[in-house]
Image 1: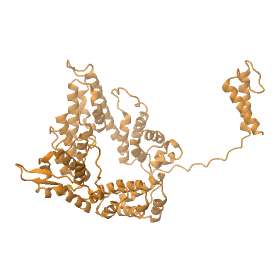
Image 2: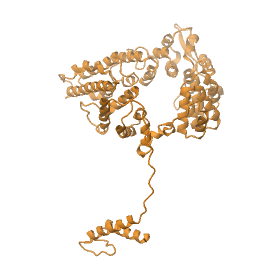
Image 3: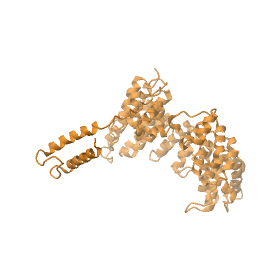
Image 4: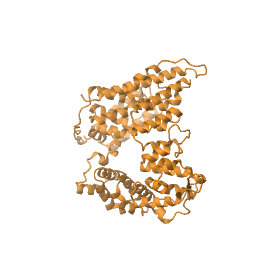
Length: 534
């Protein structure tokens, strides 16, 4: 067969079809009303000729069978529920009023967490929809891939749309070697991709911290600066005194970011040499002045940032608009162990220290540094002292200067104390400033916190405003309120009598929002029941 002639004929037919037979008549065909039909007939003949000249391609290798998933099968009721949650993915994509129907897609993360806790395997037929959902929402991926199991990785190798599953799994789904497999560990560490090496280091660090540190130390001097930073961050897991010599060496690293991370990790070890050096520096800056009418904290900020301070992680150059001395003071105090302050400040407790007046307008700077130290060191006593009582009129408490800092301080408290504090805050200040604080509370919310949120929503409804100002809190309540609270909310479903100064129709919108909340809580209760083992 003359392939050149065949190709030229086909191109002429395509050109005539695109331009139209009135403007271009293909060779061998005459113009007229029958030209379009003749063109299609010629194209059909030419198609057969082209295909007849092709040799059959060699059959592609059949994929290996999907691996078995040894986990127990999902109960039938939970299988149906999962299908409903995944089918709702496109229905909730639009904007506008939500009405009284629950947002099923927002319940999928909670459902996946519960299913993974029970150790169930994903139904094979649900895997494509589950991977599509995880593809569109990165926050779903860890739980979705855990639930999907090894078959998700098998599918991801066959569909480019799901390749994210391979990227999210160290080694592309291959089993990582254990610390005892020395040869395989060394090979993967020396030859693997960056993501594989990070995953390997994290896996070994979780099981044998010393082995991971030794692995990192063996190639530390040859790693790129950005890679050293990521590898060093893995030492946060299982951080202990044994890591101090390695971190001390990292304080002399060429990269400023690596030095800063090493200093931060060392400051989290209260008995480290760096922590002692920072305690001495901070102690030279902060003292109790007894010459005044009442004991007062006096502050003498550093006058210079010497080489030793820089080596220990203090950044010498202050940000724009920030004084150098206050910038250095904040970093030094932040890195000093909080446990040293009672001995340096007259044996006072954290609460007594925070209550002392601070001379010369240094209070906000000093308290802010103590806040950062309490968060870094996860010190509950200092966090309580800096938070103050939730009913205090100060917007940020004794030490915090923002709600974001208060939220971080709350993270150092246990779940019950955290919930109790936020409930007290809501009881005094309402919901308008509580969204960030609610986000750090354990799910489901403890009973006092749940009651405080519902009571505050009820007060907002009685005030006659629209519920849209509280849509964020209402969304949190749908996901975090204990489902057992649903019965207590039935009294809020009726449309209330609207006061004269209320926004038009607000009562109906509130009834709709509470109906959605109650329906969602009951749906969550049903989900939990369906996932229980038979």
